[in-house]
Structure formats: structure tokens, C-alpha cells
Length: 289
Image 1 (tube, one colour):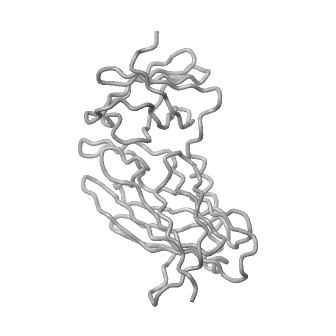
Image 2: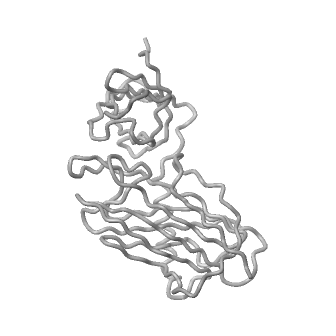
Image 3: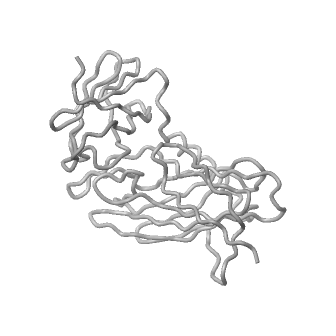
């Protein structure tokens, strides 16, 4: 009897755009159950697996979860903000295949019933990278996933679906690959990158707020800070931005429940011109002079 495949829980890395060191696992044997489809549905959402390849060869290929939401409903980023939780996926893959963590495109601030969440509306593509080893057996290759999510609009509804992709794709789906490939590439372009080597970031902790200073080498006219770690800042509070000659300075209010000043603030700094980079600002309790 073939060994059961290892289930990989992929909740999205705390480092944006990181790829998991996934587990090499055995081919799965499945009990007599309906085969998962490429698409699934839940209340107020449709989810599907898409790929940028019609066939598989050794190397890497792109795959993504694409969520299409009803108007005014939203799905969550890796840090959901004041409420909710991000999508989760458990992958079952053949021997010689590994699946990376979800790559998170830049979210938006969503105000809902007095709360501020970080997430996506209308439609979002969440890419994952798939590595395929050389020497796979000939024949079709399937990847399956169990996906769970929460969508909200004043009230929240959970959903789940079992999805699968099998390569080579059937003729009925091959015509969609160019559009899928473009959607995956566009989503990856919206995934924040590591800050350039010349940037610096630091923060000072005041009584009720953090003063975050980001030096980029140019005067910045504005910015939004998206925290990667929940519970550090007050997500509902306005972020006051002051341009400085070589970057910007930002006041962000501490979370009311924060009892200990963190060693660092990790997050995404997004600028009006579309740049978005991950920063880690070491926190000092004594303002710089």
C-alpha cells in the first residue's frame, strides 16, 4: 500500500514573500470520496486554484488561490487587524513536489463596524510557488488542498473547500492559462519586497504611541504602515505622517492591550507611488536626540 502524503499547513509567513522549506512527502492514497474540483464556493465567496503552466516539468511553476468576493465583503491579510483571520491551506502533494507558503499582496485598510482590518475586497490572488524535482514518474501529477477562510461584512462567515489541480491540464482549461499566468504575475508584483539595503528604520516608544522613522534616501510625501505582528499598534487610530528630508516620520498609537514594549516593529511601509517594502524598526524607549 502506498504511504499517505504529509499534510502541510500553510498559513502564510510572517516575512512577506518568503517561500517555505516544505516537506517532501509521499503520494497520497485517497479513500472512496468525490474527487476535489478546481473550484469551490462558500457564502459570499468563490475560490479556485489557478496555475501558470498547462504541463509540468522539473523546476518551478506558479500556482495561486483566487478568491472572488461578493460586493462589500472582505477577506483577510496575514495580520487581519482588529478581527478575523487569514485564509489557511493544507496541501497534499506527490513525492518530489513541494509547495511554498502563501505570498501576500499588499492589503488595504478596511473600516467595518468601528474596527479596522487589513485585507482584500472584490477579488484577490494569493500566489504560492511549487517546486518540482527531476525524475518524477511519467503520467498526471495532482496537487490537492483543503482551504479555510473567513469573510466579513459587519458579520463574519467561515467557509472551506477541497480543491485540486491535475497536470497536464484538460483541454477545457488550457485556454485560461495565459490569463491565469498574468493574474499570478500581477499578484506577485503587489507582494511587498525587502527594504533596499540603504534604507534604515527605527522607532521610539512614547507614553501612548510609537514614533517610526524610515530613511529611504529621498523626501517621502506620505505612507501607511501595515503591522505584521498583531496587538502592537491601535489599528483604528490615524497615522500621522511628517515628511523629512531623507524619508518620513510617522506617529502610530500603541494598542490599548500592549503591556510590554516590543523589541521591534515589523511591518510593511507603503508609499503613494506604489512602492511597498518590509521593514523592521528597532524600538528604543529613549527618543533620539
